[in-house]
Length: 218
Image 1 (cartoon, helix red, strand yellow):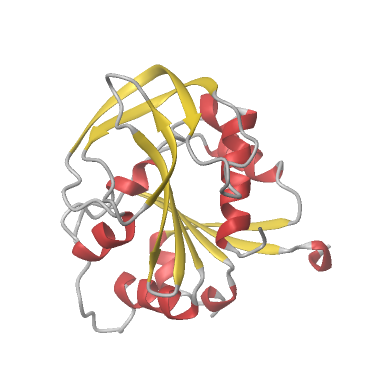
Image 2 (cartoon, one colour):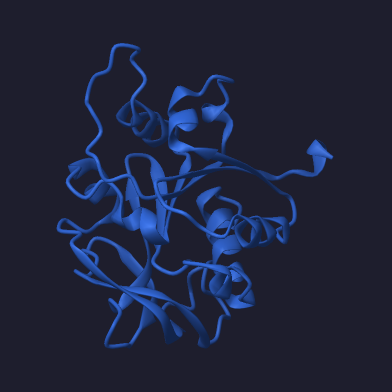
């Protein structure tokens, strides 16, 4: 029932294929959260006028073209991002969404990495280590292993708070970090390519707690 829902989340996708079933099953495992899966075009258009009501917007898109600053109908991703920042709604940037809009300064400010050129490496056996047990997202977590796609790219800037690290030749070191953009809390997490991560209980815990933290519930 809707009355049992504590957090509402828009999950924004596009320009990258993924395991829809595994992705949805991960979200279905999270109690008291309602997810609205949609492509970027629908999120920006906001035909139902619901965007202001989401507690968190989780980006899992891979658009490469820099958004146009002004369009005839007045609906742009920049307007949508500015609205989130004004409202203080949570922004979750997951996996390949970190690499979206590579030449757009606004997205680089949200992510906290200026130059986002990258290499990628499929099916890597990785160990993820929490590095800040005092943060609500990582409190009590222990190191865990899983198979996932990794990125080699520049590290996040010093004005971010790193939470998770991977010490692996084919991965950036800091893979989970928080920051702020406008009035919004931001959580970026490199992991999350396919069901090898979606089904991992530790990965699910990080995503679940990330959503709670972004929504100011923990």
